[in-house]
Amino acid sequence: MKKIAIFASGGGSNFQAIYEKILSGDIPAEISIVVSNNPNCGAINLAEKNVLPTFIVNKARYPDPVVQNMMLKQNLLKADVDLICLAGYMKMIPNNIVAHFANCILNIHPALLPNFGGKGFYGMKVHEAVIQSNTAESGATVHFVDAKYDNGPIVLQEKVIIATDDTANLLAEKVLAVEHRIYPEVVKAFCENRIVWENNQPKIEVIIEN
Ligand code: GRF
Image (cartoon, rainbow, N blue to C red; front, top):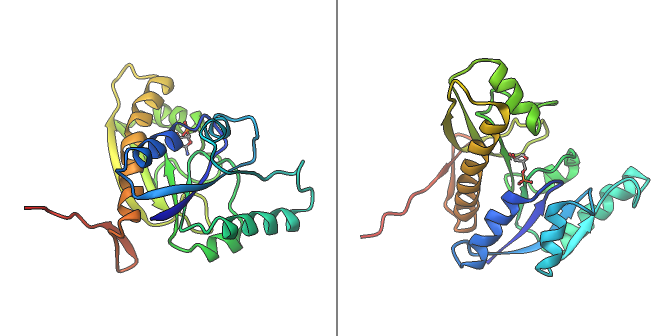
């Protein structure tokens, strides 16, 4: 049974989608810690309602960045984390944590990376930029995290067709529905040791049952 850390700053709907699959037994894992910079966000409320351990990491609690970083790492080690899932986490992950958990940190991004990713592309800004670009499609991407924003190896992407009258809000809704499907799928594959690496690219191994 893998132990998962969820990092989230917002509503927590991706966290919820993953958590529901854990509760139903579909993902063989447990949530061992929920990390946030925002003690009042939806993700922390969801964790508290379900009596899951939480850890709040921000400047108010730890003004010294070195201490902040140390406390975060200590809490992840104490929770015996195998996989970190970034689910709308608005802060950069410190380099030492990325290095310690190499190939064990996933992120979901609400566009088809490498397009519309990188610094400044977060939340509605992504969907607004996509709509303004007049492109015909967008989608969601699950990727491993490296030291740069939205840059690590892609595990799974799914496209969404953009209708001519789609607004950024409508597109966000369509993409979020896709996110709730593909993120749990990748987390499940990770927890079942079905992510295989070939030439530094991750792939989901599909098991065909007769
Ligand atoms: C999602 O759109 C995700 O792609 C992005 O942040 C948003 C988080 O939404 N990284 P929620 O908090 O999971 O509802």
